[in-house]
Amino acid sequence: MEWFRKAKSGIGTLIKKDTPADLWVKCDGCKEVLYRKELAQHLHVCDHCGHHFRIGAAEYVRILVDAGTWFPMDTTLRSVDPLKFVAKKKYKDSIQEAEKKTGAASGVLSGTGKIEGRPVALGVMDFRFIGGSMGSVEGEKIARVFRKALRDKVPAIIVSASGGARMQEGVLSLMQMASTSAEIARMRDAGLPFLSILTNPTMGGVTASFAMLGDVHIAEPGSLIGFAGERVIRETIRQQLPPGFQRAEFLLEKGFVDLIAPRPELKATVARVLGHLYPG
Ligand SMILES: [Zn+2]
Image 1 (cartoon, rainbow, N blue to C red):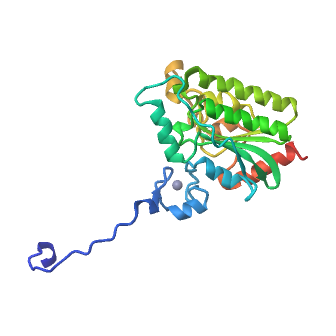
Image 2 (image 1 turned 90 degrees about the vertical axis):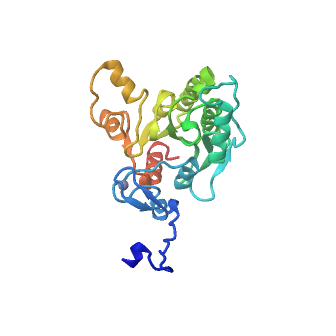
Image 3 (image 1 turned 30 degrees about the vertical axis):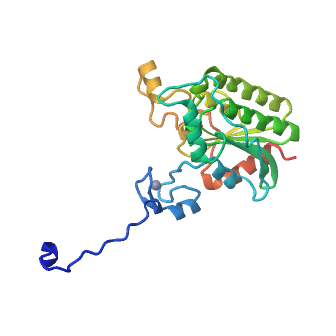
């Protein structure tokens, strides 16, 4: 009781040294508290429930591409603000913040590399860069991945993570849908495969263009994939939507997605599909 009352002088409380907050992370899937270091070793997949945490573009490159084979392309292409767009905040400020957060000049990381020894051209979207939205630069970088694939006669792979078109660039952003789709038509004419990897989330203008034009669509488990959001659809058609609507598993059942690959199996799955489609 002396301790509670602190009646006597000199009775102190041991101060627990604060644990660094970022050492542990709570799983959004099962609420389990996970050790961040261990989570990273599991490629940011919860080992209790299989929840896939969102990861950045550079991490996908590390997961997919053979070590020492990655050559980045167009790293200096940078978004501009053609419409001098201001909404809640200035578009110019959003770009600056995104550049700071990701250390990249745009929302797409692109380059060439090898996947289990097979040369590919690869583009990866980064959701942390203004919600992975597709502006002119992102669209152009993706189009250039296809052009590079055509020049080198190698398969193209795009990893999508996007809320859709970047409304701050208006119609210039929408034009990227046509531009990227046209390159895929050229890939098809040349007989080169395009693998589309869909991660959480892949929505809007990205789904409505290149992300759904793959020869094979591989999704990460639980990914939200769709065009309009669930609420908009529900309110438009005035009907209840089935459970799991717009999730990867639902889309697999309906035939929009060909394969679901958990992240630890992603590289091997991509290599296997490439082996079938483009053994040369
Ligand atoms: Zn979990």
